[in-house]
Image 1 (tube, rainbow, N blue to C red):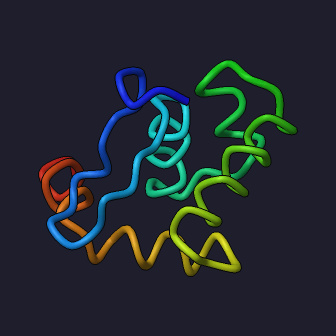
Image 2 (image 1 turned 90 degrees about the horizontal axis):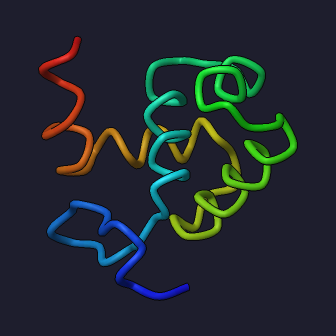
Length: 86
């Protein structure tokens, strides 16, 4: 995938790129949504949510969604985008 259509994961220590759809799903996971709720919120199939979650876990070297969410919460991405919403 071309970098021009990917959005940079905002963290000073990592250079990981996520697609816009992965970021939408990530936002929902950070808010505690289930796969079904993410699918409904983003307007995609549950299988697609599972595929995106798998890609995000792979990019972050995580085995579980919980581990992925905890890793994201320790980054600049989380603090710059979600703390103000809570």
